[in-house]
Image (tube, rainbow, N blue to C red; front, side, top):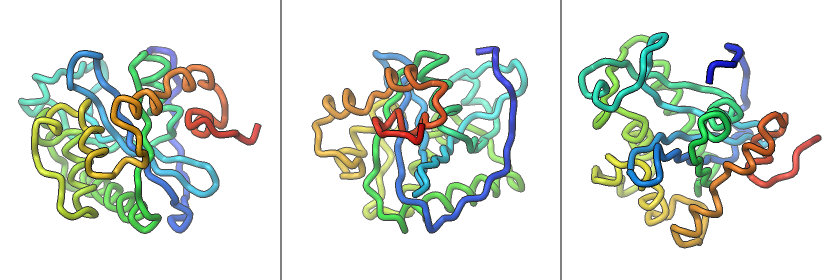
Length: 214
């Protein structure tokens, strides 16, 4: 995707209005377990803020799983609109995107949001190297989520292969659905909705099958 307009905005959010958490899984292909994962947070006014932990790349620097093992990148937290973070993957890249609701009380959602932003700010002062296995999108989410659940989720193959992480989340009761895994994956695949509503100002509501203001 080469046609885009860089734009950064400063926004203020009322944490008392944070009401929901969503788990995004984007498999790199249909056959393997590699995937990108991130979280999105919903507010009472129907706005959403996505937070994605990524490898920080320089201009024209490609991403490589192998380079991620040898301190080629730093860790960065990307905070943005779902139309950017989800739309880039579902619409422009053609990756499958699964958008799962998470079972969380508002207080838990706020604690998770704050914990992620505190680490994002800490990285400005104490940068960390990205690592494909030990310091990536999935391990970072796990670090944050484990501060809120007991017992914590342990290390295992499903962590190294994040495309299967929804299975762990479902088994632990973190996904807000009673559907079996295969049905949940079909239910929460949002590509068709994302493509249909790519330019809709109510993109975040539309991909959830909700009515917008327009």
